[in-house]
Length: 195
Length: 195
Image 1 (cartoon, each protein chain N blue to C red):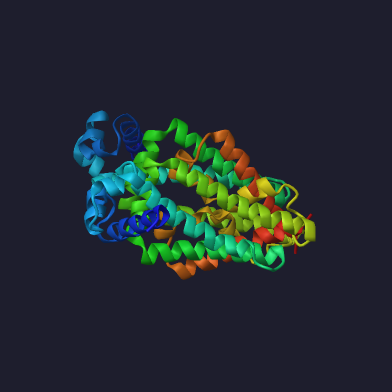
Image 2 (cartoon, rainbow over the protein chains, first blue to last red):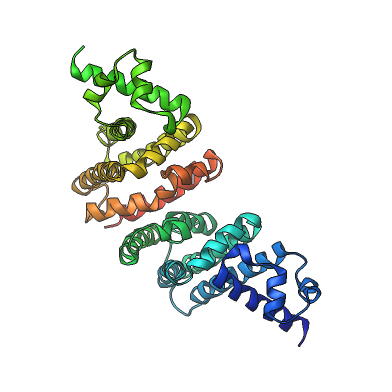
């Protein structure tokens, strides 16, 4: 097993422990014993408990960004991709709230220890939307996206309620949130279609 | 002093106590002694501590709704009124966050005891926006507001980040929030101008 594989195995074990026991219980010792490994072996890959926890959160955030990234890169007109991207992100967050409550709580907790993770994730999402808007401007489906950077930011701010984990968790029934988001997205895309 | 005046005097004293000492310290006994009044006199107007606290919060919320209501009723085209209304509400919330932190904290706390207050307040705000959109539809400045009720809801949801007290308090520098809100509002109004 090479270093990359070992790292992935440690992260898998750490994620499983987080799911079962929550963020407080995740220590290097727990992970090492779950893998029948020496602590030193785990420490060779993650220099501290904080580094291990941050790496688990980064793995989740990367999965979200890959999932939305595949929508951003779809072969379709930009206005359709934008709509699908926004609805897709909201659906991922709803799924996390219902299926991965323990992980989300851990993520919020760990996010406070490592705020740069959230900032980088947020930048990555903004750049995906920016790319869609740039395409829409060039192909003419979104002529109102004169300034793709500030438009991307505005779009993510306007849909904040539907992708911020706490707000999704406390924002009422998923069907109602989906209906509300659809109205917001429709209105914004109409705005972007106007040059 | 008639009953209405006495009620107003009690509410003023209760608000002052809340500002000074926070929501935990607000009791009928404190208010009565601040006014050199018997407890019975206060109880005649407010049947419980909870009723007194809820009445103070209702007073604040009513002030907000009156302030935004005067923007909604201005003599100006609906698209201008909509923009002013949204920016006005955000400004009121920013002001509360910086100047009235104690009151906001109390309001959030008491809001949990009396959730119908927030619901009624929210309905009142939605109906102000609805009225503006209805006018915009009739006068032709906002031809995209076919369904003023769902459009009003979409507009308030899209600007949630800029009028929810906790999000305003934790949403970064006021100037940056104002710039972000402006982008969101501009985009939505463009959408509403497209029929």
